Amino acid sequence: MLIGQDICIVGAGIGGLAAACALAMRGARVTVLEQADAVREVGAGIQVSPNGLSVLDALGVGDEVRARCPRSKAVHLLDGLTGRSVIRMDLERLRPDQDFRLVHRADLIDILLTRATGLGVVVETGQAVTAATIGHDDVTLTVNGVDRDLPFVIGADGLHSVLRPILTGKRDPFFTGQVAWRALVPATGGEPMEARVFMGPGRHMVTYPLRDGSLINIVAVEERDGWADEGWHHPDDPDNLRRAFAMFADAPRALLARAETVNIWGLFRHPVANQWHKGPAVILGDAAHPTLPFMAQGAVMALEDAWVLADSLAVAGLDEGPALYQARRRHRAENVIEAANGNARNYHYANPVLRFLGHNALRFAGNLSPDSVLKRYDWIYDYDVTTA
View 1 (cartoon, one colour):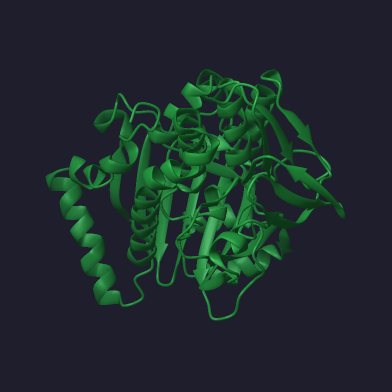
View 2: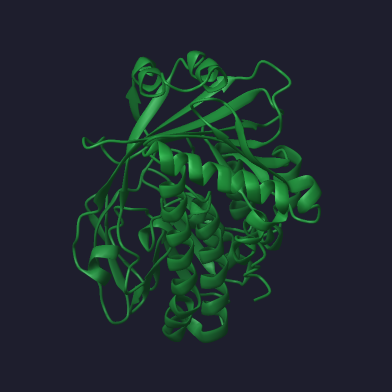
């Protein structure tokens, strides 16, 4: 039902490019509008779990992702103050048939962009979309100050989407009381190929290797009353990051000591949108359901959205497909976001008694039944939207 249909996507991030690929594979003629002068990403890492890899496989890029991005062997939670292990979930042993990848975001963007253009997708850079009007039969986008009438538009333009306010009513995103720093530092060699989470009072730090193990990705989150602007591109003094984690153990502080360039951003959220579509317009990813980075599912949810949206439009057409897409996605998005919020609370115990009890409960569970903690998230990782 999509052969020859013209579809425009706003935003050339992971969700937008994945949707472009999925739609083009079904015969749609796809144009992507990207406001930057080139499709690129700042250096940063993401974790792609099996539910995301299934989408990448279906898009025809899974093998290249595996070739360029190392497999994660474990998720290791540690007490940030002492460096003592809390629980190590051995993915190689406990989930040998599942594939968790440590991905440089720029590499995934490059892979998806190459695949999209190879499928005939047209990517227009330097296209700033500043306003939208949704009509009965088309959508008018104001692009670089000029109106363009388009038959069908997908908003993959993130937290500050131009389409979302039209669908849900204008509401500014709210500050969650947390800021995050990102940094890439050189590896010293021999770092384990695993994601490590150092947990502390009101803060935590995630680290893992990227590419061939020559880089270590750092994401450090701190609770605070003041806030930083939303967005990834705000430079900060590395000493501010080091001071925020000065009480942490030697190993995480040694990583931070090597940070020369850091970016800081405030963690903002909208509630999950109550309406993801209207007429010939629909939203996906953070435009529909921004999530905190505590389940490593933000990019993966965008990948799932992209596949389900393309499938729904192909099955039900451009008129009925958007409603089918929302019905298939909203409940899952809400549940994943709630799981991420729960991790935020568990990582940041401020009360030392609660921290002691929480950490030891995890240690006990890890010693008694190492698989039990991972099983809590099977509903996330085992779900395959390409076959559901």
